[in-house]
Length: 496
Image (tube, rainbow, N blue to C red):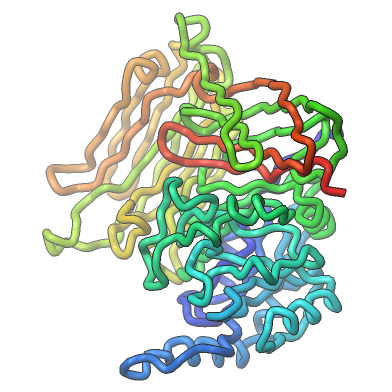
């Protein structure tokens, strides 16, 4: 199998060019700061929206009007943002429908028109003509209440569906991340991904945030990974159309998954059995990796636990730095706290870092910035607050990938919100976490989490599975101990 690079992005998110908040310029800047690619999908229309008590439908109608009025500006900003090899930006819009379910349209090129349709068929005709993607989202809401209508599914411009977003998890009606943050009900069994695969439909999996705070790639709200030869619009689109993509909740779990040597998303022919192989590199301790065939878990793998100092310090190690906490609203002390800090690694090497950035609080001007000043020093500018925090988590964090032994030390020099310096060794952090407060209760704090050894964060396995005398699909589900998940797109067997 060809070796691919993994690129991370978000192809469904919103801002004030619709009924969210924040400028299109801010969305691009935020995305460029921690993602490889993104698509802005402004709220465009809701052809079958009903009147609401107190005229509340105007919230949506005014948002649609804002996108229409500012569409020329949006097009220009997205076109100017794209830099193949550095960062890819796509133009898009979201089409609402109570009867047919919401759809996100993503264009392959720049300066394209909004389109208004009163049926999925009409929208699909437009997408086929434009060679655009048409991706259904929050699938599992009840049919007729903006949930997906699988009866109308067509692969022609819908190679993938949105398995996870800030709404929750549409894979199954019994899985984690239930639907509860909106007013459209819980998860309907017949509208889940599992039900659609059982019907013989063929699609890949993506995650996207559907964030309304102008913050693409918001941690915990949904993310996707694309397996590509290089970073370009053409390669991202080719990966999506080939279903060589996977969905994530937030942590950037690295997934390689093949069936008889073919990558995720493939359609293959097979005889009586197939060989499934996978390799996982997590950003935290892995809990379980599951192989799911035709809706049934047929194989589970668990990480090995460290058995001694030599294995505990096999590299690379994963180490999470988290900052925030601080007062909650009950104390009438809501505030935004700015952070400036530098982490220096001594007697070791900082290999990579993975930002985990929450979307709130909204601020048009503030940004999170990570600057690798040398191989062993990372400067961080950030901000935290409890205001409107997604699922009530106000914190920000970054995962460091480090090569080092027990004598490797991490010097943290904090300049804002207070001046203080601390030193922690990997030897100490293997034993337990270290928590540091910026002042007396209820001041903010930062924490070095306990080191995650390589043996606890990575896993490789292979399994031979029988193939039934009919078509079959196999996909992979990964869960870390901190709850973050990944879903690799299915491989479809004997679907031709």
